[in-house]
Image 1 (cartoon, rainbow, N blue to C red):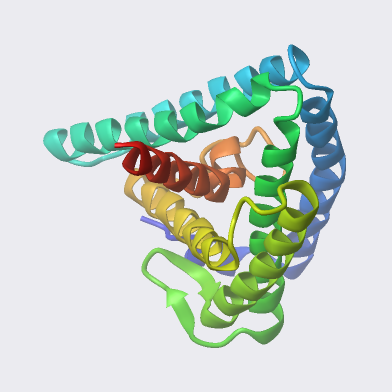
Image 2 (cartoon, rainbow, N blue to C red):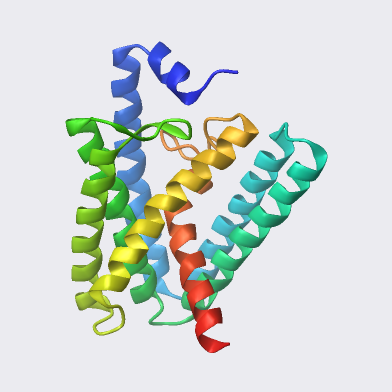
Length: 231
């Protein structure tokens, strides 16, 4: 079985540059579109969210279908993964239905996107020891640290603007850590299914699970916190 490291190593340099350009073009188009549809509010935000949710479950179903795990391991994989995705989505849906819900979703997206971006840039420029080579061979400790720093700074600043007084500085540090853990968790799920991307719906980025892995992880953590806090 070819690993992600093997696939990337076989790509010529011009193809890697082309992939990066494709990622930038996709992001430049999809980020403003997504933010705009969420900002408009219901029912547009709910319709948009419903389409994303449908894609997430389709991609998760494909990962489960492709997984070569033994029957009971595969069954556990399906149950736990479905619970994880469902609870994450359950936490987000109410904010899509509220006129002011865009503020929370924007803040969460800014936190996650900045964490991912700073981790990618830091890891690419500084390199160094691998963070989890058996799960995601391209991730480094330098990328992890720059992701933590950048994510916390942007998340805290965006919180002061959009949600003043809601999340403490320590809470934001914890959520940025969860965001990076969610990225690794999705990488491990893809490795169990022996695929590089959850789908090819987003040019240069893979699928919605690939782009929203950290977002789902933070949503899941917040949902668990709410359940435990109210119990």
